[in-house]
Image 1 (cartoon, rainbow, N blue to C red):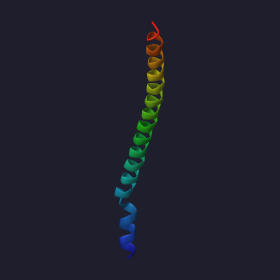
Image 2: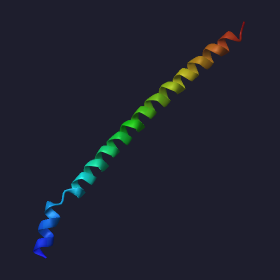
Image 3: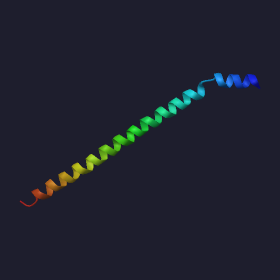
Image 4: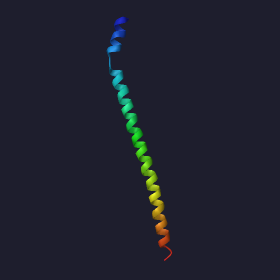
Length: 59
């Protein structure tokens, strides 16, 4: 049993898995933040374009 515990402590496969999970979560978080920023700016650009087009219809 002691040998099993010592081998478990030496095995670093779990630590590498945790590193990858944290890295993946960070990448996903950055992607969500970028998507939110792009979506917000796209909506405001579309609103500005719609306003410009509607003001041109008056002629």
